[in-house]
Image (tube, rainbow, N blue to C red; front, side, top):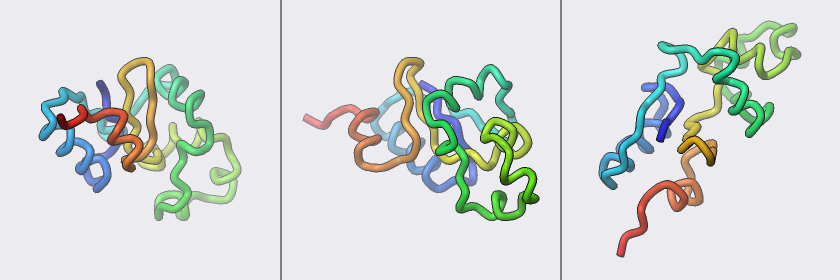
Length: 111
C-alpha cells in the first residue's frame, strides 16, 4: 500500500500512525521531495479529477491567475504540495482524505 502526501500534513501523519498501530505496512511517498511523474499523476487525476487540488491552502492562494485557471495536472506538476492529502492506494482502490469511511476501508477490523 502507498500513501501519497507530505510529512508536514497532519492527516498524513495521523494515517501513518494509525497504520503503524494496526500493523499495516505502508510506503510513504513525499510528493514534494520525490515529485510524481506525469504517468504517476495520471491514475490519481483519473480517480479524483480536480478534487485532487486542495484549493484551501496558502500555496493555492499564492498561485497567479493564469495558474489557477490551468488544468489540475499542470497545477500539481508545478506545485505538488497542492495535492489534497492523503491519497492512499493498494494498486486497485484509491481514497482521498482520512475520514471515518477511509479508516474503515483500510484499517483491519477489531474483533
